[in-house]
Amino acid sequence: MINKAYIPEAVILAKGEYPSLPLPLQLLEEARYVVCCDGAANEYISRGRTPDVIIGDGDSLSPENRVKYADLIQHIPDQETNDQTKAVHYLQKKGVRNIAIVGATGKREDHTLGNISLLIDYMRSGIEVRMFTDYGVFIPIQHTQTFASQVGQQVSIFNFNAKGLRGEGLFYPLSDFNNWWQGTLNEATANEFTIHCTGEYLIFLTY
Amino acid sequence: MINKAYIPEAVILAKGEYPSLPLPLQLLEEARYVVCCDGAANEYISRGRTPDVIIGDGDSLSPENRVKYADLIQHIPDQETNDQTKAVHYLQKKGVRNIAIVGATGKREDHTLGNISLLIDYMRSGIEVRMFTDYGVFIPIQHTQTFASQVGQQVSIFNFNAKGLRGEGLFYPLSDFNNWWQGTLNEATANEFTIHCTGEYLIFLTY
Image (cartoon, rainbow over the protein chains, first blue to last red):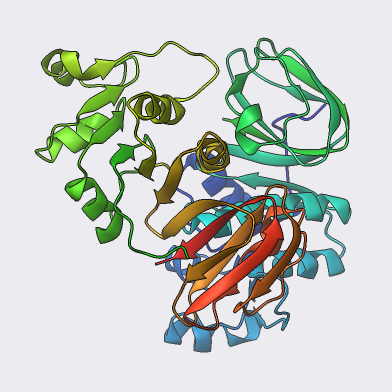
């Protein structure tokens, strides 16, 4: 059962809009280890915090932070991935398997789409990952799974390659959706719901 | 050739974040016909404008606007679609074939994903549609197409069911992507680029 209780080993602060909701902010605050993606470190530092690592080339850091935190900057040259993925790989190499990502959405929509869909790839590489936004949480899932919920909680399902999709405890029936919008705006009808299927999908749960 | 010159017959103001960039704002300003999705009408009206139609049940309109603009409200009961799609269908019934959508992103990410992916469905139903955000424009495309561009312009391609994807005038090679992020963050290398393929995809061009 997937439920709210979730204590990540590390939190990645990505380069979208800085979180403003208590839940993602609290995750950042209580994180045992924080990786900032490049320029995102500026605002984190301005709030009196110090990241454990800054991933990127430091180009979007303020000149002051670039000097002051030079020893925290990990420059990972790889044109094929973005800073969020570099941060995940960095943590993965350190043996971290349980990651929360915040601040990954809310600016350029193609970045938002890219960052969200990368969760599927992280799951495939053995990472347990959740992305917390100002509106809800995205979780990549494989096969049949049960989720804790509240009655009326909004649920959206984005199908990647799942077959035989069937819901239990959801207001609208599921099918093998092939466009993103088709699984959006569903609703939990009880304190848990189950998605039956074989394959991969993303779930978005409002708080 | 797809280029910037685009004068829509109608503009839909959706219920995401109100546009703040000159381009989407100008589209709204110069629109011959404006459809507001429900609560989005409040801010449009507060800027001294009057929509031609308000789609929705009026629930998110201010009590004052609900009374004052009662004759503009088109309540279309259909649990299977959202207000953006109802607005498209409304225009389609009036014979409109050329639509710009603004204000459709920037709030709940599942709504953003849903709204963007619906462009593919609108294209299938014969509508020429573009979605203008504060960062760029999404255009649903079928088969091989050439686009006007500037050198260095950022281009992201989201593959729905296209096969044989091959680019010309793009920095990174294309392939038959199966995850959303794989076609993001490409770049035009000349004043036009061509995407060769059979099938449907979404393109995102930064301004």
